[in-house]
Length: 123
Image (spheres, one colour):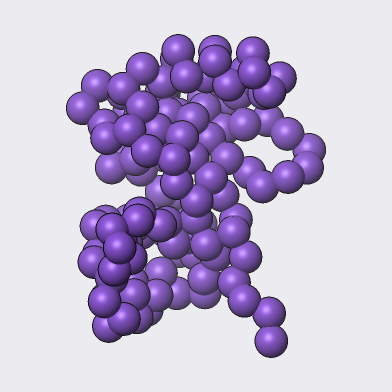
């Protein structure tokens, strides 16, 4: 049996334009800031999805008042069920489930050591 895959990463900071410039220069990434994003994750228009043809999809965003972090999301069929399971195993729900678009729901949990992990699934 195969485990659930990592499906998305994000880098969040207080100056998302500077971060996009930094990572764009460092890795040659280009960004699309026109996509939908949950308000809990980033200010609208400040989240840039990495435009790439291979690799794990990701984004860089945030804004004033957003906690700095690097986060990965694991794909699941039911975000609420995964959040409940994480809690039953000693994790703590931090966000969600939150709909980011018509087709995507996300949540955040911290594991028993306090590491933040994202969970993503269909709406």
